[in-house]
Image (tube, rainbow, N blue to C red; front, side, top):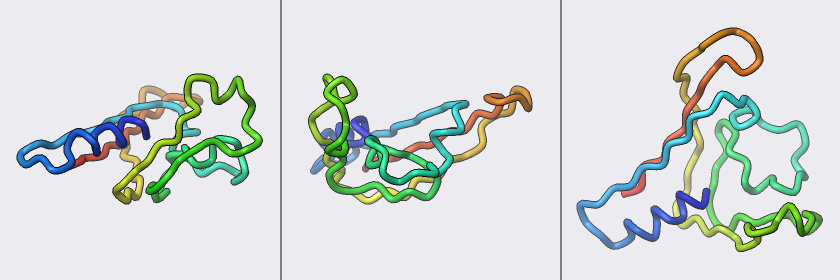
Length: 106
């Protein structure tokens, strides 16, 4: 999400400039909605169909070690509904499926 914030700043008010953020992963925990909603990182989750906008920050009960060097909130000006896309299946074991998500910022 920090990369989306950065692209919004770079492209804001500029014509003929477009930025793209792409994430490719084989970790299903990124696209699967978590079972618990009150985790310390819940505002940073990027699961399928999540809508991301506004201020993103750690929950109050996050430890200092968790937040170390990442304690400044992220501000997303746009509104993004996250959609994951199938990329490849290497094998059917655990982490064999790859999916990607992208965001285009005008």
